[in-house]
Image (cartoon, rainbow, N blue to C red; front, side):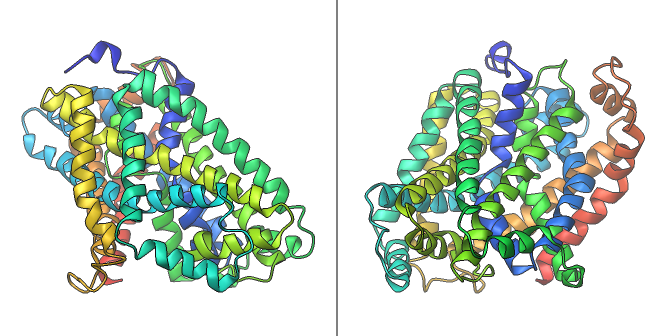
Length: 450
C-alpha cells in the first residue's frame, strides 16, 4: 500500500466531518425536499428517519468495519479480508463502476449548481418572471458548451482537493466546508421562518405527519432515500473507513454522520417549504423545485438576491463534499492497487469521468433524442446505479460480512479489540444478517419493476 502511514484521518471529528460530507450532498438539499413534497410531507419524514435508524446506520457501520479492518480501498478490502476467496472482490468492482457512473451524472447537476452561483452573484436571476426563470434553466441545460464548461470546472475543483491528500485535502476541506454548510443553512432557515404568511402551513406540512399518506409508495421512497442519502453501496464509506483511527468508536461515528446527514435534509426542508407556501407555490414541484421554483421564491422576497447567492453557494458546497468522496473512491483504488501517484490518479480519474459525464450533460441538449432502452444517457446512469449497482453491491456486502466473515472478527472490530462493551452488537448483527438484506432486496425489486 502506498503511503499507508500517512493516509488516515488525524482526528475523530475530521473523520466524522469527511464522511458526513460524503453522505451530505445534492440528495439532501435537492432530492430530499422534492421527494418529501411528492410523498405528503411529515409522514414521509417520519418514515425516512425510522429507516435511517433501522437500516442506514447499520449499513454504514458495515462499510466502516470492512474498511477499517482491511485498511484498504474498495477492491483491496475484500481481497485482504478473504484472501482464499478472491471472488468477493467483485463487490469492490461493482463499487468502482457505480462510483464512476454516479460521479459522471452527479457532476452534471453539480455543474448546474455552480452556474447558478455565478448567475446569483451576477444578479441574473432577479426581476425575472416565472416563465423567464424556467426558460433560463431550459436554455442552459440544453446548451452544448456552457453545461460542459461548468461541469469541468467542478471536476477540476474536486480533483484539486483530492490531489492534496487525505489529511491536507479531504480532512482539511471537510473541516471548513461542513461548518460553512450548516451556518449557511441556518441563515436560510431564519430568513424562511420570518416570511410571514404561509410559514405555519409550510412547517405543518414538514413536521405534522398525515398518516393517511403512508402507503406502499411512501414506504419504498423513504426506504430508498434513507439508503441513497447515506451513500451506501458505492465504496465511499469503505474507503473512508480505512482512514478511521483504530481507537475511534464506529457506532458513535456512524450515529453522528447519519445525524448530520438527516439534519441537513431537515434544515433544507425548513428552508424550502415555508418559503414555497408563503408564496403560493407547489411543494410537489419535482426536481425543478430548486432550479425553477426557488429562484421565483427569491424574486418574491425582500433581499431575495442575497439569499439566492447564499442558497446556491450552500448547494455547491454540498455537491463538492460529495464529489470529493466519489473521486476519492477511484483515486484510492488507483494509488493502492496500481501504485499510481495521487496527483496522477486524480488527473486520470477526472479525465475519465468528464469523458463519460459529457454524454450525460449533452443528453439534455444535442443528445436528448438519443435513448438506450428508453432512457437518456443521464437517466440510464441514474437508473443503473440507483436500481442495480448500489443495492446489489450493498446486498453482497451484507452477505459477506454477515454470513461469510467470522463473527468474532466483526465483534472485535466493532468493540475496538475488546476495549468497548459493544452492548448492541447482537442487535446490529441480526440487522446485518436478516433485516438489511431483506430491505435491500425490496429496494432492488422495486427498482427493477418500477
